[in-house]
Structures are given as C-alpha cells and as structure tokens.
Image 1: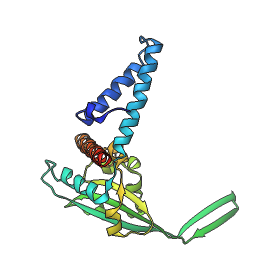
Image 2 (image 1 turned 30 degrees about the vertical axis):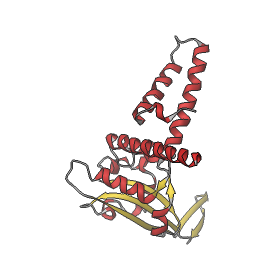
Image 3 (image 1 turned 60 degrees about the horizontal axis):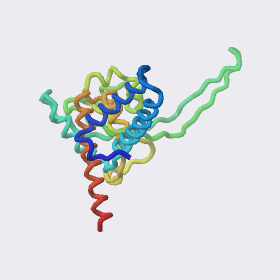
Image 4 (image 1 turned 90 degrees about the horizontal axis):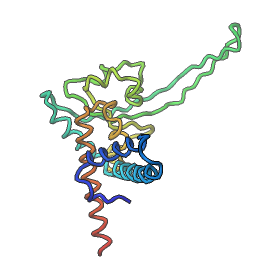
Length: 215
C-alpha cells in the first residue's frame, strides 16, 4: 500500500498515475519491467480511489463547494438550493400493429430531489424546461448546454422522501464530483482545488486513525 506521506498534493498523485499509464503503453520497455510498472499502477489506482472515497457530511461538502464557487471572479454570489419534484401519470402505447394499440397508464408517483448550488440571480425553475422534470440534474452529460454556462452546479441527486436535517448530516463521498465535476458545472480549476481539499482531508483522517490506534 502506498504511503500518503510520500505525496505533497493530489496533483503529484495524479501525475504519477499518468506517468505509469504512459510507461505501461510504451513498447520499448521490457515485459518484465512493465509487469512491475503495472503493479505500481494498480496500487496507485487503488490509492486514488481510497482518497476519493473520503467521507464527510453533506453539509461539510456543500459548505466547501459554496466557498469555492463564491470565490469565482464573476462578482456573483452563489446559494444552495434543494429542489424536490414528482414525476407521475405516464402513458405507454404499445403497437401490436397499426390497427391494434394497447394503452397502459400508471399513476405511481416518483419523487426526486436535487441539491444544487446556483448563481443568486438565476431562477433555476425558469432556466430548465418543465418537460425535463428533473432529468437535467440526473443526467448532466445529456444536458451539456446548461452546464457550459456555469450558472449552477449539481452536487447530488436522489429519490424518495426528503428530510433536510437528516440529509445534511448524512456522510458520503463526492467521488463522482471529483471525476466528473466539469460535467456538473465546475471549472477545471475548481475540480483540481476540490481534489486537493479531499486529499488534505484524507491525510488528516489517516493521522486521526493512527492517533487512536496508538492509544
């Protein structure tokens, strides 16, 4: 297992990962040497996964994101919003042939929630079309035109009932946001900054665990 103290930043970790990936695809390197490089790559990939799986409460992550977005040079303020919606009453028309059509109706309510950080002068409900019914938050890669504007960042999406105090206190990782943050409304620079913050939190948690073990 790699030692976290070997690295000063997440950027160093990711840089070493890229170097190992390049070495693995280099045809001029001997196979026996490449085997060792591959093992190093497996280890560093696991190391990166462990870092990105660092858990903190939703409130902690959201406060960090708010600080990052509010330090943008666009002179706007950003605010947290949690949107709750429902999707219901759908019809499915099944064609056996063009003269015989079966209609199936469902009235099941599908409750959804999205935690977003949005520019304070933007009305997110007006920005998205009613027919999208939350899909813009659940599928950022399919709605790139919204996210290119950097008007809002989708932090999290989830189904079923919402209890704000419980949700804020819930612990989770932000692994997806660290890898796909640019698709969710962050800039490349902000994703890098967030990765460095998570790396520092990971190091601190490792120190705390060692202190507990020593006792």
